[in-house]
Length: 475
Image 1 (tube, rainbow, N blue to C red):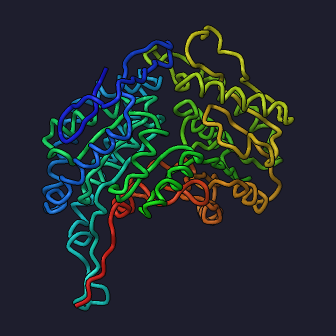
Image 2 (image 1 turned 180 degrees about the vertical axis):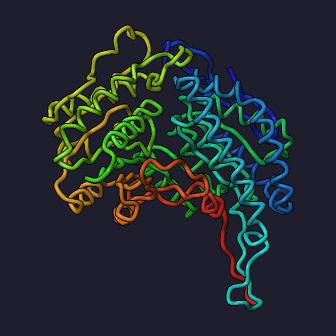
Image 3 (image 1 turned 135 degrees about the vertical axis):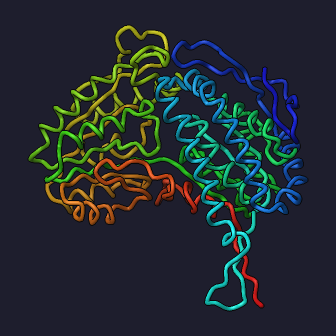
């Protein structure tokens, strides 16, 4: 069994409990991590608190030099990290290489570039109005980072790298479902020579370790990514000590296809987005909004596209979609498919049966529903699986209303032959990020949600400032 990482050393947990790591493609145990307890969190926070004064006092250029060395090592080890993620969550190897590992490397590099470009203004201060008074940004102190399983390396990078660059120290509680990437990154930070106590890892469950991190009086900020239910609990627990809480939660994002759009491109791109990571993406475009006059064609195109995502094991040649992460997640997806049928939606392709030849492993069929009403649960609740709901609309105003008709507001998309029209609709969507006509990912943009999709922003310069207190100095 693995250990915790406390004060610069691999250290046994105070608990004798263990959590098995399951390969979702085979259902076999591939590793085990400690089921940490509150006393482990105490030790981690003590180490982080002791390291904070010297780490925060370093010039930001020196902090980033440590992180730049870690980035080099992570890049060198990227192949092995991708293989561990493919095993851990069942992601196809090519996807694990390009997205699950490649994108965190891009974000890591982008954060360092942004600090290099803006560090003087951020940390030395700026003079509003040209006077002598200063606005400066300072680290919070000890940051508790609680991360999910769907993008296990990416989500840690989004929290740990900007937090450390800003001068905070970190206590990480990684997902217990898919923890191997967290251990790989911790080894990288250790080998890069990060000072003892600056970064600490405590594995365990959310109700035990996660709550201990959020509640700890010496944790100055908590950054959490996960479900709305768990995010609400983190907020409640953290409120007792009045600490800063950043939340990146769920989504039920709309893909708005306007009447003048290239229908084939828009639908095929939308299906690919929903099937990405086996639907286990908080920003998945799980609702496709199509003008009524093009609806039947869109349904046919979506069904044909979805059938091309035959589920397979991550290391098999040509696999585009792997299993979901766990038995519990498989049952959740299947339950929602049954709910959709009972609500009266038309099952166009997919369903609750195991994919052909996949009786072992947590595999689910890529599923497309038509004749979906916006009030149905499959149109309102986050399924977190490869399930697409197609909804017809009559006017542009109708499309915007339906797109905004959820408790979420994380992401969205708009397709139109007229870029100005697409932009106008994008501005009307109550969501933290919108892609127009299949635009690529821009790592310098902010990412985060409206309403129940969260509080705060990750990515880009906003993702660095999220880990900074703001101080006004009058002189």
